[in-house]
Image (tube, rainbow, N blue to C red; front, top):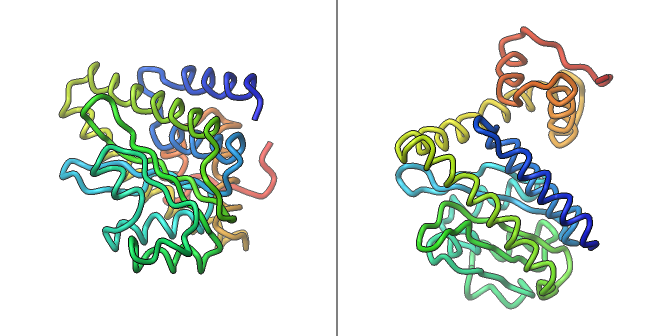
Length: 238
C-alpha cells in the first residue's frame, strides 16, 4: 500500500463530495478502493435508514453482497455490532467465531472468507452506518491498513453529515432513503443487463457503471432508463 495511492483516493473522495453528489456511486468507489489499496478480498457498506434499520448500499462482489444481506436478515455479525456499538469489530479467524456469531460465521466460511473487520461510520456520538472488510485467509487487520480504512470511513461520514448540515436533518434522511431506493433500481437494471447480455451480475454492474461514467450520467438515472427501455447498454462502451 503506497502513500501516494492512499492520498490519491482521498483526493478522489473529496472531489466527489460536491453539493449534489451521487451517494451510491460515492460509497461504491469507497468500497472498491478498500479492496484495491488495503489488501482485503471484499468490502461492503451499510447505512441506517430513518428507523435505524441497516440497509445494504455498496458491495464489491456478489459474495460480499450476499453476506451483508445475510447479516442484516439474521441481525447478527460484525457490521450490526459495529453500527450499534460505534466500535470496530473483528474476527481474525472465523473458525473460532462460531459462538459469537453461530449462524453467520458458518455462512462466511462457506463462501470462502476466514476473517472480517467492521468499522463504524461514526462522527462523535452519531453512527450512520458501517464498513465491512473481508479476508479469504485468517489474519489480523494490518495496523496501517486499519488506519487508512478509518480515514476512508471518516471522509465518507463527514461528507454525508455535511450534506445534512446543508439541507437540514430531515432532508438528509430523505436522501439516504433515496440512496437505498436507488440501490433497488440499480440492482433491477443490473439483473436485466445480466440476463440480456448473458453476463454474471458483477460484470453487468461494471458495464452499467462504465456506461454512466463515459456519458457523465448519474448511475441511478441510467438504471431507470435501462429499466424503462430508453437506453440500450451493450458490451462495447466507448
